[in-house]
Length: 469
Image (tube, rainbow, N blue to C red; front, side, top):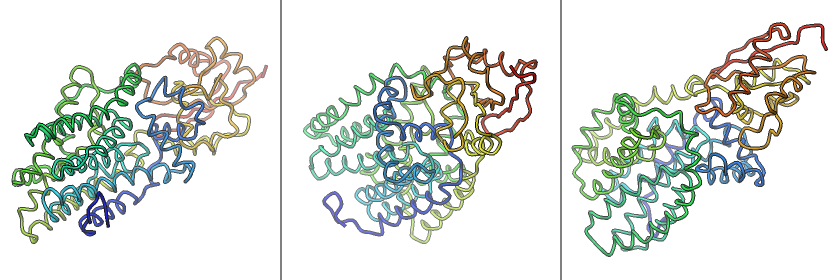
């Protein structure tokens, strides 16, 4: 199987890749789409003409991913499985490419062990079951590192490495934290010529990413909900990178046991620098969430595999099986509906079951309107009564608050969706207050006749009191 100019031993790469496919594809349509996935679905369905103006306002950092998803949805549909399939592909790439990278740096056993550790990683599996780009960039991060190793060791061109780095940054800017790690790897070679060639290719790759960063920086308020990291956050990050809390101590022992200098020069900076840089920066301006450093899981797997390689097969295989058994409860847990921030399938089912043609729909927070994109068929026939320009911007535009009374005048029944998570920086506080005043607090005009809960909020049915006007 010719890949990157070499013949790859099939079991070393294919076994981890196939295992990753089996694990991540299992129960792919189990958990409901949640809020962020609803954004992916909505953006992938948009005409190109309306997609770019939205990216000029918000979510520019995800623009290339939305374009890729738009093409994928056009080919395979927009169901839960289709929306999440690219993330599965990313996890498969991460496992297979880690195995090949480990093989080149430490031999077939290191590659096999490292690929298998990525395949059974609960963190990798969790984000492989989500319609976002975090496993895709993880797979590309491993591929970029593999291309770097090939260029350094075999004096190959850095061209494809540069292309991959550019793709990484354009898919998610935080993945460029891999670049300082690669710089350390190159510096440890102590070859000025290689350093200059790497710097030239990397500078060219970072140019389009700099343009994206300039566009995205004014939009940084969209992550204003992120809190500064504390000791609990750091502990959870270490556990997730290792696989599970129960495997963490053994993982540390195995990492210390490994003595492969070439592997350490590549994987150690990759393991340490991206999380450290993001955590330290987040003490001043919080940006850290674990999914932004998911691409470091393969690096930890490589270091752990180097330690496993020091053991006999009779010891290494049981340790690997132990890691898999310890991860099993986490894999089962992440497939439960309770593991997502909200359950938009239940919300859609409530609306679809309880509504009738001609009913109206109101969202307490305007930016909650995006949840309709998860299961749009459930909202067919409902009047989004306060929407002025529903297709403009990410969440549409509402009518001015002073026109709400006019919009509601002919409504007899309306469903009021109260999303429990208030936006970090709502632009519609006056509108929110107007909705409270006109509907929820207006007992003289509206009677609440139904209430349903879903994870993430509640739905209230209001009916206008007689006499009707």
